[in-house]
Length: 99
Image (cartoon, rainbow, N blue to C red; front, side, top):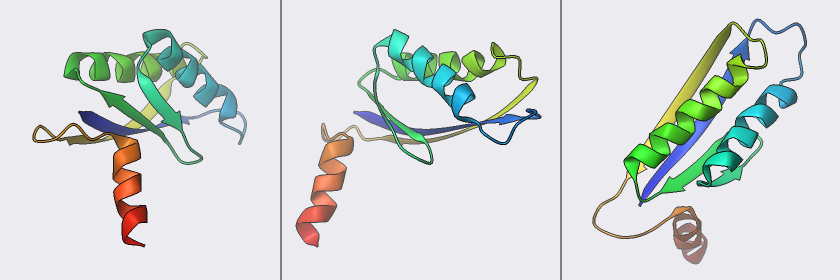
């Protein structure tokens, strides 16, 4: 299972709110069918296939440009675990069990 955290920041917008740009990126993720979870500071993705994951990230990144932005900073953090099939929910559950 490959888990990733994606943060997309449009640069040079004429407004302080970025939600419309992020909505465009999330809509692009929706079209890919990849498993994702939106949070207040980023979006977590899950996939069994690295090509699917990177394709979804590219589509989300490009979707922001389609909204008219001329510069986009995208940060990606990837956890690619090959010894066990554990996704995001299992990671959270493991911590909660220890609390």
